Amino acid sequence: MTSKCLHIRGMLLLWYFITCFEVSGVLEETCSSPVYLELGDTGTLQCSFPNDFHTLQWYDADDIFGETAILTYNELREKSGPGYSSGEYDIHPNGSLIIRNVSMEHETTFTVTMFQTLQQLPQHFQVRVKTVAKSLRNRPVIPSCETTLGSCYIEWTQSTSISCQIEHSRPAINTTWSLRNSQGDNKSPSRHEIWSDVETYTTAVKLHDPSMYQTNLSIYVCKADDPIGLLEMNETTVLLEKKDIDWSQFPVIEKFRERYSTVKLPCSQQSPQIVVWKEGESVNDLITGVYEVPSEDNFRSPVPDRWKLGANGSLTIQKISITDESTYACHSFDGKMETFDVYKLKVIGRILPTETQSVLIKTGTPWTAIILVAALIVIVCLGFIIRFLLTVTQTRHPIRNREQRQRTAQIYEGVNLEDTPSISVDKFRYFIDIY
Image (cartoon, rainbow, N blue to C red; front, side, top):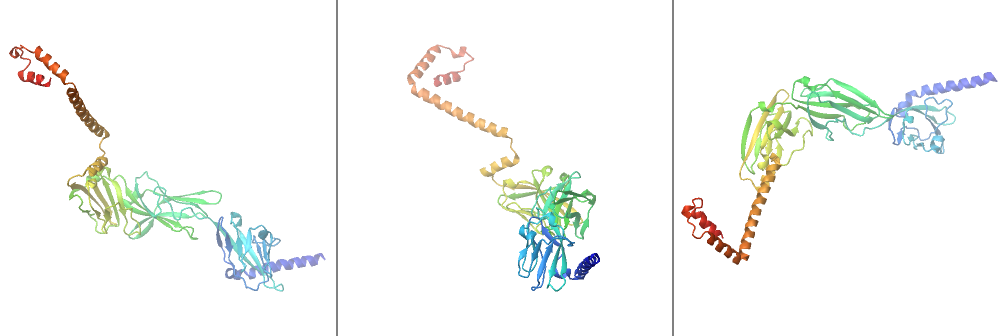
């Protein structure tokens, strides 16, 4: 009896291994594997079974010997099993397994057994499940220049750290820095870092000293290696410009234009790959206004009103006013040579009151000067008020004023003005006329 039981058990084991190996060649045709399911979502293990199958049994294990099916789908298309009863699993009419609220526990190998008929041995198919999590951002992120356009501008020094990150993804996504030029992209020396929480990863790559390429303008690209498509965009581009450029060493060209006219400031490069325009009161306080990389799609900063960038990098300012009086500088690069152009724009014409106010604000007029002017105005107004009050007083008291004039005449009656050289005749007459 014992030998008979051992024989039956051995036959079952033999049948299990034979059927598993026999269907391994049909696995890819029947069920897709591997399958990437996003954490927290509802996922489906896609399979394609004949319409006339008798029974399907799904297992959440690769070795099903001695395991209980999590879901059974019989010939009457009735569903049963602990996984179905708990609501964790369901099944599509074509036999595909549905997983609700995907978690890391579902990152395993699932096995499905199909009975075509009860008289035939079942077929086994396996599906490998990998859980994924999409990053909160749809592309690599450069923290020092937040942007949703996929491109940005950074003024850097050797102490500036330029990092590119992909946050909270599963699996971890590797990134690299590359220098982009007309010949293509060349990988740059960089240092990789990775952090992990319970379910996701954050990767970062830091760009080493870009000054090794001996240029003041350069374009770098942060590329993500994303074979399963967790990101919408795999690249983020950054324009780097050295911050410590000495603009005072370049000649300044003066431009005189009338108010409300148009001025065009050209760059020396005829076909620049990179253009950066700066503006300031002098060459010592230039601030980046606009930038453009014509070879890159949508790589242009917002352009202020009345400003226009030409195809050759020129800057056109329309309807200029006194507020446009400033120093403008063009920094351009054609892939081989850099050029620096500096202009001083001066506006000719009468200044309107509204423009005067703008000039005071723009040039930073000290508040003390404004306060002094206001105080002077107040003093003048008070002088007019006091004079008016004195006139009114004299008019309202004519008798008293007449008596004062009589007393003054009596005092000075008989006085010989020649004996009093300290009092001139003109001053005495003026004194009498007042009273």
